[in-house]
Image (cartoon, rainbow, N blue to C red; front, side, top):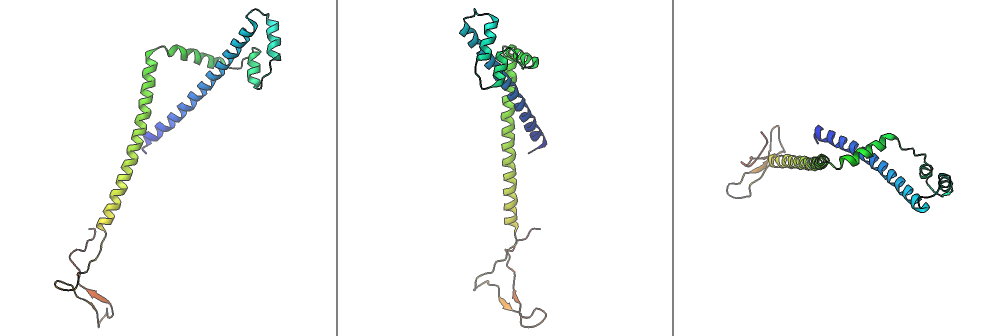
Length: 175
């Protein structure tokens, strides 16, 4: 994979992590809204603030964060509140949808580039293997009969006892 592609993948992973963080903050805000809505519906909107505080303290909950928020002690920083406010405002603009479309296109382009790089590597490996197999030196011996090359054992001299034969014209070697 090229350096640009790996850098893009790293940046994309960071962006996905940040988006997950924002989505989790939005999920917590949604839970707060549900809790407030349920409390308002349960009291009918007419109970005093003291009664509301007593009910919030008496309400059993397994998540301490939800219990603290129901008491009015929200621990969500103003930063996340601003982000959600700006997000909902920006979702009304066409520019946001164009940017999201461009992001999706960029992700698809990166996936296609990675697939192309993989196919190119495979093609180069296959070509290299085929070249080696095609250019590998080999020796063929002709069958006995007309045009045959004699094979004999050298009787005397420096190579006595070795097998000697004439080389056929189909011997290949690289270079």
